[in-house]
Length: 425
Image (cartoon, rainbow, N blue to C red):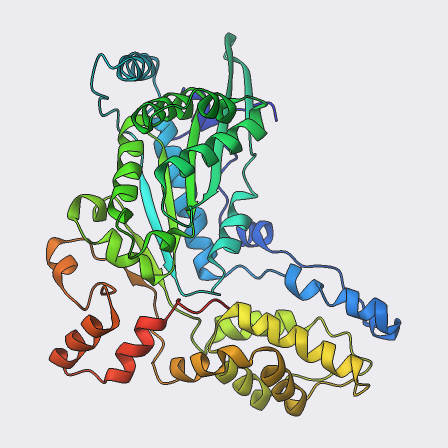
């Protein structure tokens, strides 16, 4: 899209900040984030095949949660902070120092200006989906032509989303970033890097230049738990720190609790990864709101009212994990449509759970023994907190159990915390 500028309160006269969409809040933000597929009661009279196809609406429905609203604020502020540091003088200095580093004539200087935050939550909570909904409110690329009567021929990429390589390879991550940029810009950064067999040091220096010249505001690193317990985990984190300093880009790191022990091994990394840890949804108004929204999409011949008993049963079975809840509702409806029962009840839900979600039943039972915090937990990034076994996910199960025994906590609670986020749902 072509840039449309609005006045910025914090950074007036900065074209990159003023090209971002205005910040939303309240009901306007909730409506923008929500996804509500169309539904009609007459859909229940359609053929079996049509109703089975329409069941996919359960996966398309999205109810913004507290986590989603938090992420929007974090993402917007991170982009704004990154672009707020862009000035002609800083850009000129960054390009000169980066070019000198690529030629081996100087050590890459710290440009700074970037910000970072981490999003840690149990598997199935919907972290990646929430980020997708948030990022959908921003254009993928913005073209600048003129700003206040002056020529400004450049492009701005508000965000890039990449997956952490399965082996934690820094080189693979850089090549993936190049691939994303090539898809947006029609460039050949990845082909050039592969054809010239560039060393890792040169790739890192080159990446700093490319990210900055294309005005990337936020780099989202998903599935960061892939670096957990790998020897190069700290090296990968140090690469991200270097990218923040060298390119000035903001970084969002997303993963399950497995990644905490890597982020908190050294204070230099931890202080750059402020953020929030999210547990499963408690059995409160937020879970009820999500369930009622999903319950609306019934494609069985006969509609079923949601009773308090059924709501309580569904929470016990899903333990407030949205992904499990959606899959259970989907499979229960599919089951009673195919076998001709055509009406939801607890017996149908029990059958669907055992048939389609039996692999996670033990995991759900373990979670049921652990109390859900009523508020999200802040990540503590002081040296004392990093050393404390209560503040971090420990390296292995034996270490976790030893720390738990010393603190007088039940071993079962420690085991549940350890496996939390480890099971692929």
